[in-house]
Picture (cartoon, rainbow, N blue to C red):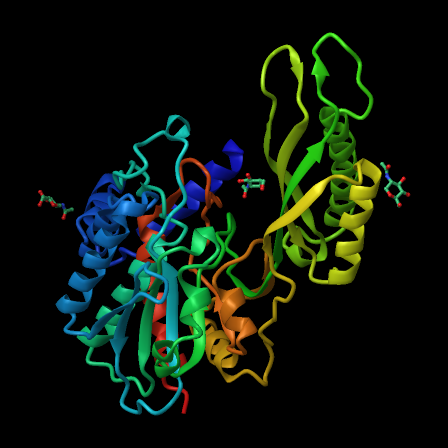
Length: 429
Ligand SMILES: *[C@@H]1O[C@H](CO)[C@@H](O)[C@H](O)[C@H]1NC(C)=O
Ligand SMILES: *[C@@H]1O[C@H](CO)[C@@H](O)[C@H](O)[C@H]1NC(C)=O
Ligand SMILES: *[C@@H]1O[C@H](CO)[C@@H](O)[C@H](O)[C@H]1NC(C)=O
């Protein structure tokens, strides 16, 4: 959508200029961008993006990076390894450390890249003439992690004292489901010792000026399906071959998608909780060009509507098997049956504090269901309130996509926004 992109660029440029009112007008755009590029916060984000944490072996470099940030601020740093992979914790102790803490959660890992689709090298932190900083993790979630630490730095430098302790938490494997991160961590004594009261975590980008708070994740169900059939010579027509069954299954899933698409189009675009998604993301099969294969394997990735009942979805999958072939094997790679929601109303003091901090900056926030799943599903299911919020207005959503970016003016404004939020939320008594 080039139109949209240009529009959001225009806005970012407008913001760039707005935030630099201290300079005499007219400000050459190049100068404003250069000025922002020279800022230590931007340099730190570039340094972090240059650690290619899509590769397992670089996760420990990220640990060292975070240790340096904690040391620079003179804050205690801890690494926990409940399942080998490192979880980093940076702590800024409040004046009243007995109060439940505020957790600023994000993750060090990023998804891999299809390099040929990128305009700029995805692990270089390249900044273009509009001040857009490109890189894997720019949206998911490296800019947010830097925003957290820079918001804390800002407050410390301003001499602000907060009542509550703040913990910056960095998870190692959010992208692969948290099996070696948040899932085992919430069961540990080290987690309980954090005395969590409220969690912030990754949020969504919006191409317009809107800000979103995600209060519930969709439940991922990932099915590993193996279809069996009679093998044979490639020149024959066999009954009930594995490929024929595959075709039947694809027809069934296409029909399911059609129904869900219908629900989706009848709702607001951000009403992600109202429909389920289904994608066939992997198909593996075949042995030789002239042999009818005896099996084919596929992975189906579903994210359930918030209203979908577990028993109904189980029955639906069972009926698919009965239609396709009863010897079909199904196992679950991922199956989260419950995803609790965080109540966002006057009964939630953290929400009230967040909304009023934003209101003071003339910003509004809209509560929505997260279209995907994050580590917050684990935390909410443990009974903790959690909101996904990142300051990324006027930003084309490119999470997991090519040319993931963040505008450096927006990034810097986000630091101020989070600092102001913390002043309110971490001072709740
Ligand atoms: C940015 O830093 C470079 C190199 O240190 C310097 O030459 C340049 O004048 C700086 N630009 C601005 C706008 O501060
Ligand atoms: C699906 O199951 C098959 C058979 O058990 C297994 O070989 C394969 O690795 C599984 N696929 C995934 C993505 O887990
Ligand atoms: C699978 O079993 C069910 C119940 O026994 C039967 O109704 C259905 O026809 C079978 N499916 C196939 C494809 O043979």
